[in-house]
Image 1 (cartoon, rainbow, N blue to C red):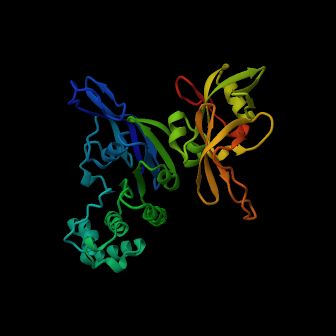
Image 2 (cartoon, one colour):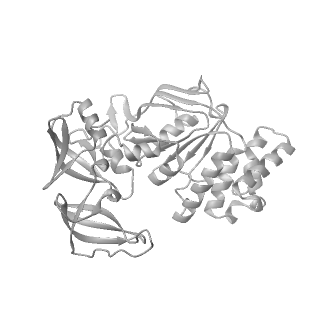
Image 3 (cartoon, rainbow, N blue to C red):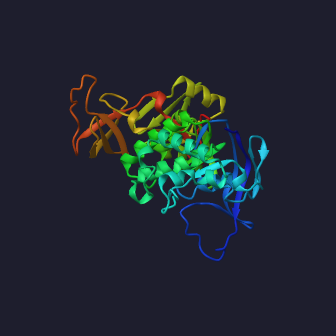
Length: 389
């Protein structure tokens, strides 16, 4: 069990390709000192908290994790574990354990010996090793595989062994670097559930890295969303879903992705409204108060609305569109609608509360749709920042 504090952490790599054009997929800053992979990272992690670092490839999340592990040096800033600065402490002396994407099991050893290996290195008595290995195997449901070698196991079973090897050490901090990315969709779902059960049974602090926002939303007490080495937002899964700090977070969190529209924020007296095409949407009272407090003036904005918050309805003050694609998902259908010269995704239910099928729309059909005041997200068109932060 441990608290972990990252204070103004910076990671700079030497720029070895100064003369070449930057053809990377990210927009990392390049300075005279080199390429900034992680910039001014600040985070206080509570004892036994489950923190998830999430973002696209190359955003700096794995680099941050490796700095906590001691596998990467810290260019600037301080890393504290239980109040002690550990920047220069060897990985083996940090009392942390790490589970890698590739499992990193010893192929010539049995499952039992793989799990026991770190304890044997520490010269733990045989009886204690046996007790801890069997306890870990029971927690992870791999007792029957203790005599097998890794090649005789499935991907999910190998991942359990890798986790077992980490938890027998009873580390203060357990680091997990995309541990489920090599599994198929069904196994990923199962292993997510196993990890949730695991964190309730062991007293340790978790730092988990993933590019999968579904994993982040289901596992994390708090989520750290990163882009190009910079933290975009830190919050609970519900907070980052309900109140995204900027356009990147809004588009990254949520499946399908949030719809974005070019709109106009207007003000009459002390009341704001959003004008979109021929429709006018008054903002809700809470949003109105924040806009007033932030001194926002009428302006062109980017309006965000999630697909699940749009409803099909006729009448005044609605938007028009033509159905181009319908993706049947069972109890709902994802409609791709051409409206206002863009693709708008709407999630429509196919079954009502009594289990009766609702008549669905078809390809080429003209529809009307709308949304409520409380589901609108307003962003500065220039900066991409939320206007209601």
